[in-house]
Image (cartoon, rainbow, N blue to C red; front, side, top):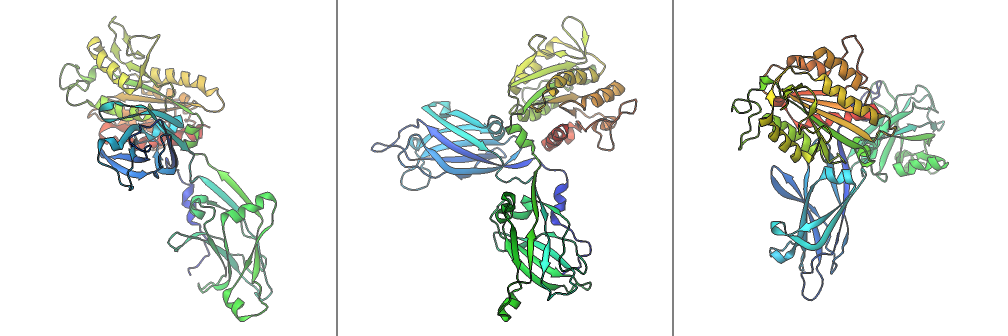
Amino acid sequence: MNDVDEATSPATSLSGPATCVSKVELRVSCKSLLDRDTLNKSDPCVVLMVQNNGQWIELDRTEVIKSNLHPIFGKVFSLDYYFEEVQKLRFEVYDIHGTHSIGTRDDDFLGGMECTLGQIVAQKKMVKPLLLKYGKYAGKSTITVGVLMEICNRHCFAHFFFPLFLQDLFSKSDPFLEIFKINDDGTEQLVHRTEVIKNNLNPVWEPFKVSLMSLCSCNEDRKLKCLVWDYDSRGKHDFIGEFYATFREMQKISSGNKVTWDCVNPKYKQKKRNYKNSGVVILNDLKLHRVYSFLDYIMGGCQIHFTVAIDFTASNGDPRNSCSLHYINPYQPNEYLKALIAVGEICQDYDRCVNLLFLRKGSVEPAGTVSHDFAINFNPEDDECEEIQGVVEAYQNCLPKIQLYGPTNVAPIINRIAKVAAGDGNIKDASCYHILLILTDGVVTDMADTREAIVRASYQPLSIIIVGVGNADFTDMQILDGDDGVLRSPKGEPVLRDIVQFVPFRDFKTVFLSDIAQQYIPFL
């Protein structure tokens, strides 16, 4: 064994920034399936397909339920959920004949349904009609997909408090404790090593914290091997004893039960007839502390409100010219559309109103008025669009009707959305959160006002994504991101929390959307 003067826990790395991946369970049932069998009813099975690089791949399938047109399947689909990705799923229902293989005949196919995992998570329970080939309805057949909370709460931590009482046969011991997780393949993985207590037969180690993911892979019945050693400065530690436990056993302390383990040395037990143990380990305290994930809040009813602001300044070029950043190519979407769709397709799954507010800035309206902040559909009384496709259509329809102008002022839009978010922020359960997507072709001209607006907005339930379109030098825009230091207003006031993510489109990856989840939690 290695020297343990500086005892460490492998779980300490978990205290860093959490990722947005979560485990979810999906349960499936169907109603009013088509009856394909002549003598009996259909024997349905649901196949779950996931889209990977444009190809549908089978991930898993349910059991076959014999002769049932209203099956409730016991099989649970387990998936990794990523907020920052569009995870496309397809559920296909088949009538199985004799074997568990999927038939090739058209009459074996009872219908299918496509959706995203984000839609299921946002709705918690999704009911959709089943469709046959070519989009034809499969009669009155429906499929219901329900989602359960995280099956593995990797953001749950256990706080332990262990004392040890050793027998007198160990004089002047310097004990320390090691806890190992026994993996499915039988290998052992160190979870935690306590500090060494010098010259003590009744040591009380410092309380320590371990995530359930690290401790037992969230399996409360997983065996834990615990070893007690007498420390030796040369690394040749003497073995005192061992005991086995499970996290389920440890939790008995919460009901007032005394939780103890005999610390046994197998060698002594074999040689000494009256040997009982080398000491007793007592669990004095166990506390569970849960750090809620972004998924918890989404499934708890948090509504995401998505707003888009597009740069219509003259520096983009005349939209009628193929060199313009706003040029509509019938065969290839421009960078504005690509960024808009990439972010909007994800956010629309969580916008419970299924409406996307669409603003524009730095242009001249048909009436000849310069504006930096009003509805792109020219209807201030109804300035929302239906889903991301409605936003795309509004963008394309407005281009022939406006004249690009300037300058690139961003502060008015941030202030407007922050004001809306402030109203929602009065709701103490943080059930509404706003995302503002700003697409621009250059550095903003009102940088001082923008910094002031961001500092004010950092107190509201709001995150801002800024995507730089084109080949301009966006170096000065990095200051808004705050990654190189805390963003401050011109007067020196710092942001309450980091709410801005800036990325040039040429470096654009949807993974940066995971930062939205990290920004939401501190707001609470």
